[in-house]
Image (cartoon, rainbow, N blue to C red; front, side, top):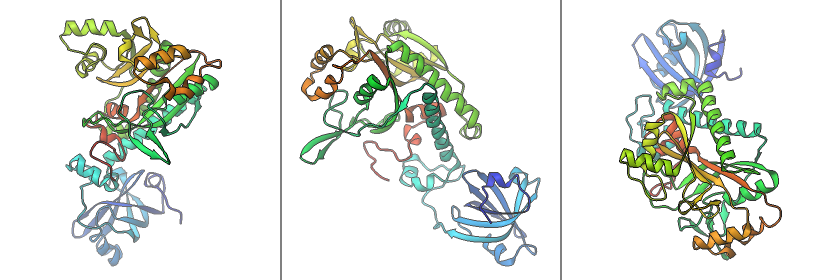
Amino acid sequence: MERTMIKEAFAKEGKVLLKGWVHDTRDLKKVRFLVLKDISGRIQVTGVNGKTDPKIFELLDNLNRESAVEVIGKLQESSQAPGGKELLPDSITMIAEAKNPLPIDASDYSKTELPLRLDNRFLDLHSTRTQAIFKIQSTILQGYRDFMIKENAIEAMFPALIGSSSEGGTDLFKTKYFEKEAYLSQSCQLYKQMLACSMEKVFAIFTVWRAEKHNTTRHLNEARQLDYEEAFADDKKVMEVMGRCMQFIVKKVIDERPEELESLKAKLEVPKVKYITFAEVKEIMKKEKVKMPAHDLSGDAEKKLEELYPNTITFVTEWPLAGKTFYIMPDGENSKGFDAIWKGMEISSGGQRIHIPELLEERLKAHKLNPKDFKSYIDSFRFGAPPHAGWGVGLERITMLMLGLDNIREAVLFPRDRERLTP
């Protein structure tokens, strides 16, 4: 007999074989219940004293929660059972017993605090809430790939080890690479530019590392980024692509994950798109009496934009040149760089890149970086490199915002931050 998923079982009649985990048990003396779960759902297994095999009836009162079991039985209609059907067991076989007590509560009503849950992530992943988060995140990734394939973009993989900083600054993790020093990559930025200048449109799902010593609910030291780069394009073109991409992803989540959204009590709507210059934002914040740095947005300013333009991806354009990295194209005192704000937080930074080698060398020096460390990168633009632009979107951050999570660590299977390196 082939294994049947619980979701499939509800559409069948006769005997089925189910494999899953013990979610809960109840003993009403004459009747005993086992709630069995797998990734597709839950089903009630019912044992009746005098009707069910005595050994099976006894076992129903001796199963530890989260144990993996195999159940063979017959489905029947039951108005009182969840889903309207229950399984009358012919056999129950222990596959892997869970020790008792459990280190955390993985039930729907768990009050276990996040740090302890993360310490025991292997068990936390049994909970409906945690599974819902990562089912949705999987759909986000699939939506990103689906959208990019329709845009005729090429998916690529890029090096995780680099010889010098991708973006300048000192927030890199240093490591030994044989006789040389190397760093964990902050970004695939330089590589995706090189590829876009030959294959025109490129996208990647790339792991980035930042050695910043922060400890907030919105930052990680290892994160995943959805990256995009397009040749023969400027900042305006790639902002338009990103707006459509985010709308596509959100709609896919709404259409394909309604149960998971409901379980997380997440209210999600396809966002609108708005464009506003940095100078305009500065004037608005002055009127609203919200403080912000000279060349950046403050957290309060990002939240205010959400208040003023709810459910909107707000692209803040014409960013001051002093507030952008060395590879962003200058435009007078400003740049062709932008940030995207959604639900009160930055989700993306991007812009048109510098494709002129001499200008790139000049901007590197302005950032106190040595052009010799970027020789292969600069040289790649000496042989027919067209104007190009792109962006990166933080996967965990948009997951957190989409689902209204309080801490970005909930949106990472195995978080890496300043304190956590295991599991």
